[in-house]
Length: 291
Image (cartoon, rainbow, N blue to C red; front, side, top):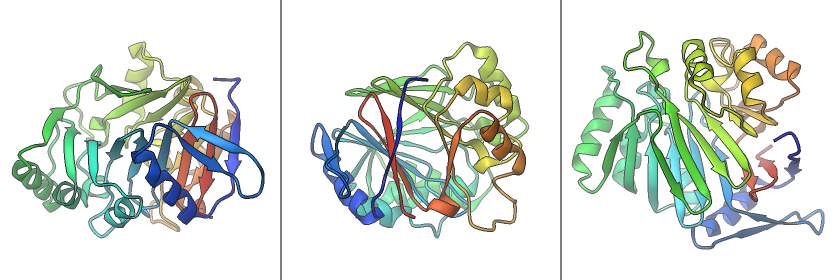
């Protein structure tokens, strides 16, 4: 991973989204930087959608769409999925039952064909959670999978492994978060929901390969997560923080940003950069931002 290169692509988000739409239909999508003659051949595009103080991530490959979380109920995830041409979601992951991650999940299930739905064995007494369960119950063709560490699935060159939840019971609902690692050729990505320090310790002790070129910073960049030991084990080139502008939680916290700085990790934030799309051609990582 240390030999990987990180390239910034300068695009408007509309151009990126339009190009990513064709990934649903072709083996490789070619991206051309309008400011140079560079042409990119990618096997995956990962959209870290600007949802304010909420979470939603779209992963696109050859004839493959996967959504991790769906933001708040009044969020824009439905519009975004429609905009980039998604009709079918091969996998959807609800990392944990907090509303900022599943608030719009019931509408996703209703409006798109969802083939497989992964969720932890955790409950939450909210309307959003109840609506999600009702939508799943009414979606007879959706295969519902209880998240367990070690579960694997793949699509072409994209290989996914669930690393968590590891334990059966946690006091903190955040720690039930589904943790997933994506291997795309020789590049890798780690998504950890809102998992906190307790889970990070479990993962460090698990023996799993935590290394990743791109790390979706857990819990919106909170100091409850992304401990120095965990970040060192991941050794990312790039950290993505999903958070709302001037949010009441103060995310991302100073401690987290200092940890990333100390380990030489480039940070992109949805509150500052808008929607962020990261690409991999199987060897190198590049990215484009909304602003």
